[in-house]
Length: 148
Image: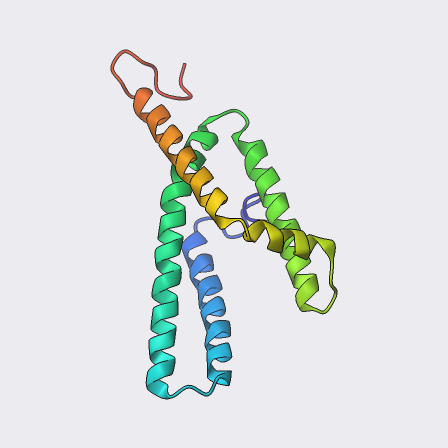
């Protein structure tokens, strides 16, 4: 929703932090049900959180160059809203599935997530191309991207 119309302008970091805290708490409850010792529980939480943060940093590093280039293009806003609508549809399907309402949307979203290698390779290729395009646009004698 925020990509379509900002809900909390200027407070994105707070919203992301609260969302992450909620996810972390949900995971900790799952671990607590496993009746691990305090030491194992703490180690499991630490390992999980470090792993998640490293993967998120990798994905941001791969996605950011393409997103920066896309934001400068005339079609950028349309692509942002389209991607937000696809994400909202997947999230709605997953929510319905969690509520016990099996649906094709959740199955499609889950199956897309099963193809992580091609997605990461695609993101890496896009990052390299976007980085090269941004660097080429900064050479002397060339106009900056998006400027006349």
